[in-house]
Length: 481
Image 1 (cartoon, helix red, strand yellow):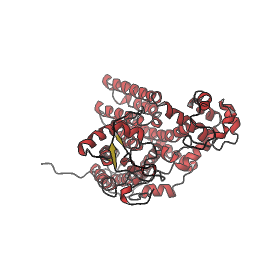
Image 2: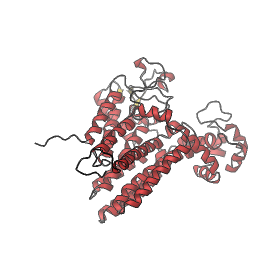
Image 3: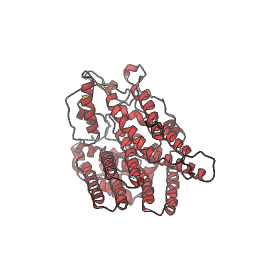
Image 4: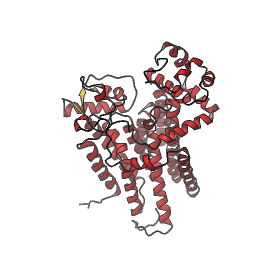
């Protein structure tokens, strides 16, 4: 009988079970209140709110543990998250036909997330016991923080984004570091990529970066089946990226365009009238500068026919991109605003507890929040700091590139390079696609990538210090990390 061996994969799994179970499953259960985004997802699973709930009970202040069952309705919103929610709704009815318990959904998320953490750990571990322990501690503190996992007890798409960004890069490392990578691993990588880019419209552009990353695996094997799978998988990702844009509901496109122009380009503009003229829009629209789509006190209503005729049907995000290309100083200002919100993992305007817990409206949970609070309070939320981290990160990548001559070694480095690029997309795309609206939540993808970069960077620094002769314990009789 084989003796059980406690590995670092088991360590991160145990940490995930204890923290996810304690925060998400045991009372007082922690989640996130609805800001109005839940409906388009939960309706597809036949889940809804009780008919007698007031607006205040439903939105912003209280998370929900229990929901009622409704007739399943699809709003036209395309997302891979809907598949998970539909399965959860079906399982919920089997477990309890009286009401839907959000913990059914968060249990599914937790299982996927534990698999993502184990995959990341397995293919990032070294021969150094010290470094492996450091990775477990860092991953636990950062990625099991309540700021991240509270999304699991909600219908926000950020939960799926978090799971599949970690799973995508964990599987990418699995492909790149295997002596003979299998087509099964490559298929799992493409599935994770697909789930990630199809979670929400904001994630769709990163499909192009993931296609480039997949192309990097071309040289890892020479056989035709391997390369055929790369071609097919990349084609699917390209189609999925296009479909996400084409299939987006018209109302969502209008919301995003309104936010991008009036709560983005025109917000704090020194010359709103001149900007409107450059965009080919009537100068009379300057009364909307600085307003968002959901305001009820705008001088021109968001669904006014005049906006339909002279704004929604005339302008596109291509025009927005061209404007910022002509005015990089204005986009730099928007990036600075993004950086100001880019160090907040969680939306502090949303309550964490169910109303039945008896806590005041909008109460925030701080259990296991060391990283999210440290990042929010002490990490500089300035563009210069983000730029500095990126400069150091890519300097390290460039240095390693000169030291690693083989295609397999460089493929691993390219994975980390792609991670940083996706982080940049995670900051730029919300600003281009939704203006400054709800930046704290819209920069979630940037936050995840930035934290992954920091985690990789800290471990890399520890490895360098170790290689300089620090007396750190190793396993396998080798000193090289």
